[in-house]
Length: 306
Image (cartoon, rainbow, N blue to C red; front, side):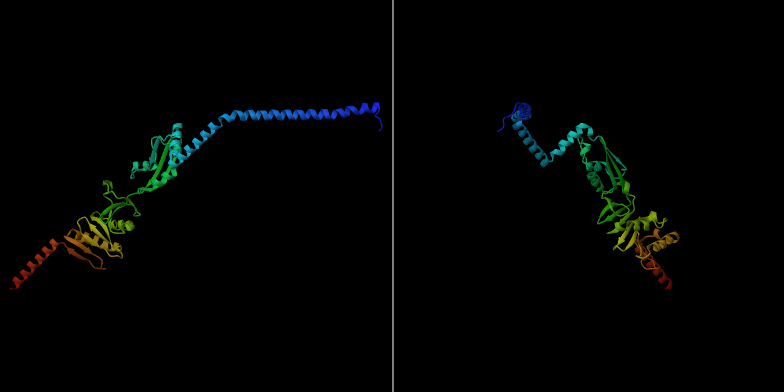
């Protein structure tokens, strides 16, 4: 082996020492950083371990509490109270367009109490429930934050009274029942009678109003066999109208009333069901008087002949 000369040793030795010293420096620095990180993580975990049981117990109790409130529905009451306390408690309910319906019934269907929060009011559900009231044609429920509810109503208008099976109901112009309670303010509405008469209420009222001179005398329109109408006067005279063209028949009655005072007589029935014919039936008292009058007239004629 060839010996290393002095010059070659001087030039190579620094290079031979430089490599391991530099590599060792970086390796030791990396290890120190790693050890410091491990100690920091260990210290953090050590500080948390004593509280782990407490955290677990609280989480367990909280989960069971939430589950119990969900089952019982108490979560809604709790949330209602919390949000009401934040300034969202319902302070007023304004109902617009109200004239016939009951305001108490409307507010009850919104399902609001003194401690209710506006955030928890279900406006769609309230609108659906209010729309079920017979007097209501259309409704809109609005929430005005922070604490107001506004209800805009469109009501059905009472059009007539419908009597069937002994019961009198208030109906609108489409025949829909609005109320089964007859109040004083609706007592003057036209009265229609009979099964299915409410489905033809506009036709009946139009017929009753067809002759203005007779209207004050007409008390009710009665649907017979769901085919034709009879009109009842305030004096109890029954006017039997034909199924076809009842308006023309009623015109004849108006003409006879004007010229002969037909309805002022002691009649029970005026029958116009046969075209171009008119039959009347007297009351019992009038019939008896008529028979007595005829008897006397016949007797007088016999005496005159004798």
